[in-house]
Image (cartoon, rainbow over all chains, first blue to last red; front, side):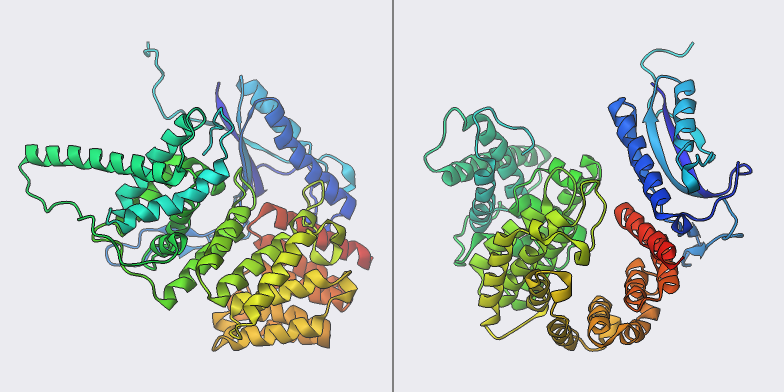
Amino acid sequence: MPKYLLLKRYRGGPEPHHAFPPIDQWAPEDVEAHMAFQDRVSELLEEHGEYVDARALTPARTWVRYGGPDAAPVTTDGPHPETSDLVAGWWMIDVESYERAVELAAWASSAPGPGGKPMYEWIDVREVMWERPQTTEET
Amino acid sequence: MTEKPSGGLDEDALRVLVPHALAALVRRGEDFDRAEDALQEALLEALRVWPEHPPHDPRAWLVAVASRRLVDARRSDAARERREEVHHAEPPAAEPSPEKGDDTLFLLFCCCHPELAPSSQVALTLRAVGGLTTREIADAFYVPEATMAQRISRAKRALSGPPVRRLDQPGDLAVVLRVLYLVYTTGHGGRVDLAREAIRLTRQLTLATEEPEARGLLALMLLNHARLPARRDPEGRIVTLDRQDRGLWDTREIAEGVRVLQSALTAGRPGRYQIEAAIAALHDDAACAEETDWPQILAWYDDLIALTDDPARRDPAAVLGRAVALGHVRGPAAGLRETDRLRDVLGDRHRWHAVRAHLHELGSDLPAAASAYAEAARRATNVAERDHLVRQAAHARAARM
C-alpha cells in the first residue's frame, strides 16, 4: 500500500479558486465549522484504517546553511518571506491507490470556509518513497 | 509495563518497588547503568512469574533476581576479558554504603544529575524511579522507541563509572524539583498520564525530605491538576479559567493541595513553588471567576518576582502572570504597561500576545484584543492553543461589529 502526504499550505501553490480572509477574521460559527471538519478528517481516516500521521507546522520559518569551517550557521527567513511557498501541515495516509489519495485530498479541500462554503483549497499530494527494497527481485 | 499480565498483577504496586530495589543495588556499589538494566530484566521476569508464584517479599525477590543477572553479566564480561587478555580492575567491591535515607530521594538525585540535559533527566527519572518502560516513555514524548532507548542509555552511561557521585547537597534538590515539574507540565496526552506520575513521584519525595519547596511543588501540582477535568470541553476545546465549570473541579485534590501547602508554609521559607501553589489555591478557592481574590494573588506575585534579581529578564513568566493580576486589580491599562517591560524578552511568544489580548478585552478594547489574539495564534506551538486563540480572535472581532 502506498503512502501519501497531503500537504496544506499557508501560501504558495496554484492560483486559489477564490480568495478568503485569514481565519481569525471569519464569523465565529464558520471558525467552529471549519475546525470541526479538520478534526473529522483525521477521525475518518482513522476509522477507514488509512491514517498514518497528521501534523501542523507553525508559520515561523528559518532557512539555515553551513557557515563554513569555524563559522556560525548562516540563517535567513528567505528571499521573499511574505510571499514564498509555506507548508502549514500534512496528513500522511496509507491507501490502496493514487486514485484514493486524490479522492481524500479533494475531500480535505472541501473544508468549509466563510459562510460555510467549501474553501476549494489546493492540496499538494506527494507519494512517500519506501526506505527498504522490496522482497521480490526487480525485473 | 505495557503488557497486562494474565494474573491481574498490581502493576502500580510493582512500580513502587522499582526505586527501592534499584537503590539497594546501587548502594551496594553496583554500577547504576548495569543495575538499572538488570532490574528491568528482573521486572519482566516478575511479570511472567508472579501471577503464578507470588513472592513472599517482592522487593527482596527483585533484588535477588537482578543481582543474579549482574553476576551473570560480570562472569561473561570476565570471560570475554580473559579471552581478550585485558587486565581490568575488579568490578566495584560490594562495600556497604553508610548512607541512609530514602531510596527515592537517593535515586532522584542520581537521575537528575546536574550534568545531564533536562530531556535525559526526565527520561531517566521516569524509567529508574517511575518504573515506566522505554516504550511508555517514548509514547509520552512522541518519539520512536529506539530514540528514547538511546537517550536513556546515553544518560546512564554518563552516570556510570565510579560509584554514583554523592549528590546530597541542597542545590541538587532544586534540580530534582524542576525535573518533576517538567514531567508534570509535559504530561498531558499519550497513553501514560505523566501528570499523575509526576504527582506520585513528588508525593514520594515529600516523604523523604523536609524541604518545604518539595511540598510546595506537590501542592502546586495538585491544585492545578484538580482543574484538569474542566479545562477542555467535550469537543476537546480549551476552556479558560474564567469560563470553567467549577463543579467539575476535583475538590479532594484541592483539599489535599491546600493541606500540603499549609504545612509547607509553616516552615516560613516560601519559595517559588509554594508561592505559585498559593496563587493556584486562590483561584481554586473562588466559587466563581468574579469572586477571585485578585489583590491577594497580586500580593503573592509581588513575592514571586521579589525572589529574582531583574525578574523581567530572569523570570519573565512571573512578571507576565503578575501583569494579569495587576490588570484585574488596578485596571487593564496598568496591566498592559507592565507587559510593555517584557516586549524585548517575550514579544515573540504567543503567551505574551494572549495576555495582552486578554487585558485589552478586559478594557473592552475589542479591536485591539482581536488583533492581539490573532498575533498570539500565529505564534502558538500547540494546535489546541492555536485553535483556541483563533476562536478568541474571531469572537472579539464579531462582538465588535
